Image (cartoon, rainbow, N blue to C red; front, side, top):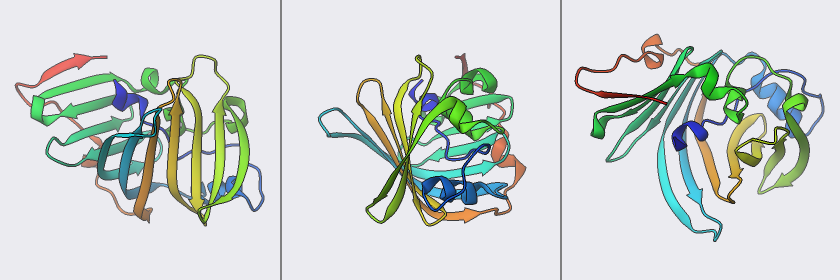
Length: 204
């Protein structure tokens, strides 16, 4: 399911080096981070640099292990991780897809959303310097079976501003983040889900 593939993480912790580049921005961004709320826009670009989809919504994070992506629009969709299960909710279809969170995130960039990890163990990391007023960090997955060629994180100061993922087929998914709130109070109900009566439940 593409929605599960796009669960890339902005968040991580572990062996990050100090300094003035994007790695240092990432380290300071994560330091003391417990919750996060951010609005986002997402676009998918094909190999011919044509935009093939655009969406927007709100992202919520409660570390560790819980998050919620809300895709707004005519056909709203939700991705909810409650610590054990990832739910993809498609209200217009009255359909829910579920998958073990551990299985869904293991060995994928989405695993950055979870607990502590060793950045250099899982990725080849390179500072890309300044571009468009942002400080860029490139992550290349070490695993041969990764679905991604590379992941770019861009910081404005210590705030994550953009995330770009290039898959094995040359398609790029880009997220821009706005109105980022650090450590807001978030209700537990955001990270809980019970399928409504009558919904089709699919196991991934």
